[in-house]
Length: 329
Ligand code: UFG
Image (tube, rainbow, N blue to C red; front, side, top):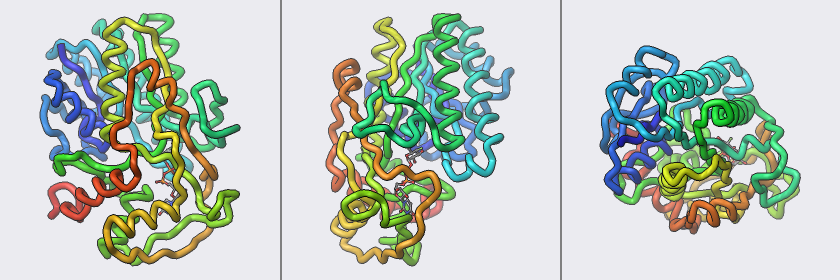
């Protein structure tokens, strides 16, 4: 039986495909290649197409024996979601509806879902656990929460079991050096810092140093993309064992400020990395740190690359070898 990975040519999707390949799974990938990269797919059978294309998706299910789906395909830019929420509802929410309908029609009963800490919004307390309230502060987080809720009702009605994984800040690259992070536009802190280290940007803009944190900059919980990938594989195992649907946070439980990230990146890269202080970015919570106790206990998940130095070093290995991303060196 094969695992269908939607968005398998994207950043986290491609690392999950790599983890599935390492353990000999048969893999089918669906990606419309709007954000994904064909070169990021290290194996499996790639179908280029969109989840919202009903006939196409049905054909993918018909041509393969799929027993589980891992669903990454979505738009994920917080800023863009605030100016163009319709795009997020259409691609993320409607795309997921099409996927669940196709699964139901084809008798596939297991789905692992790529969710986000953005479902929580401004946290009531840190570390955040899965029982904390979910009040997203942006349209992106709102669509991810809507997708989770849709899965709950498809479970109730049709017995499609799900595991939703709410990631904190994904970073780093595969140990092989073959795949890494290549977004266009890039908005995430670590790749932007590394682009500044490479001289591709004149400086890194720090969005706000007046937050109620020790050095005034925002604190985040950075998690290695291959540790995230491992959690998806464990989530497939959980569903194959026939266990209940569940929601898990994925983070290291340790927070680093923007300034700390830049300092570590200076050490790792041995480059200067000029910094310019700027105003706060709208919608940024001061501190986001995960409690991942539940994932450790119930999935047996154990992050193996949890030191921020190592996470940044692996990202640097990729960025310095592929300064312009996939296929553009
Ligand atoms: N930052 C800067 N300068 C930059 C880019 C980022 O100072 O050029 C700061 C941000 O203000 C934030 C921190 O670095 O304080 C991390 O920012 P990222 O954009 O890398 O990540 P976010 O925490 O904003 O977002 C991540 C995911 C989102 C998800 C969110 C909450 O990228 O998809 O976590 O889960 F919604």
